[in-house]
Image (cartoon, rainbow, N blue to C red):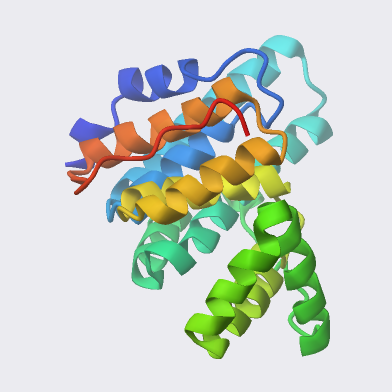
Length: 246
């Protein structure tokens, strides 16, 4: 099924949807597509997205005469972003889907681009995770951070702690792979796939308040929707639009 869904033409169209003035990583489209397929429960499509993006990157590097060490660093960054994005998206779409996707990706991952140890500091004291989580939560939600935290704490104090410390402190903030805006894009891609319109609206607005360009944010939303539709996702009430003014 994935072979029919993830054709080179389909991936090329996804990549072409991103504006040339985009301020994020040029491989953002691949990160969003990989998360969208993973969250849509099509694990076998994730390695196809990665292989296409890697081949495209290698061709670009060869044409530009990129030095070997720089080329390797750029390729590793691509692999690392897709792995990390799929891992982080598991908090929203479910870890079984993340596990299946990362195992499928590992099978095609060149040895030179694999990890040998965790990127996270697994010995970090809990209080540091609390602090990191609060800081990143604030960077993502900005002016609405306190009201959202209050809402989570009121619903169930353990929910508030889990979201801030485990979600933002350990998982989202455990590495420096993504900027806050890129992290929001990862969350939007997963949330669209699992049909969570309230949170999609929150994070599309958060992206814009965090400085994300309008055209780029719209491209992220469009990518996630196109991938999810190919995977058979049906939304009960549609997907929130990107707000022009924030």
